Length: 136
Image (cartoon, rainbow, N blue to C red):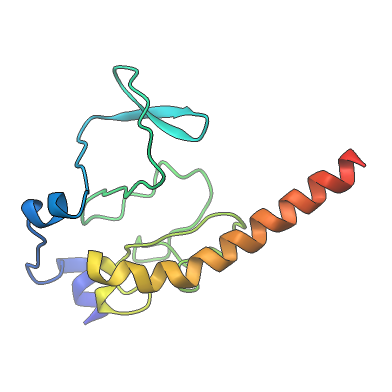
């Protein structure tokens, strides 16, 4: 099912906007043009005070904006369960079949995040230790 889903799309599954709103998810459709203090900045200059961003890009894997080679022959990112081993510090979540079918769904991305987050934490900790060593 992986090749079919990645080339033709998955079955029509959806989460209703009302369900997302009920748990505090706010949908922003404005273009993000940059960041300020790690927060997304919208085109009109509004800085979003958020802890997390779910970046939804659609069903086609357009990775052209990433300036390192991460796409496989099928156009999808080459990862080990979301960790791009060829580019330390780059991670993916929400990609169809990152680990399983549910990876592309809000109900499945958590499982993938549980795998990716420890990698991010280790990298962040290593970076902080290296900065401390340089400062000393």
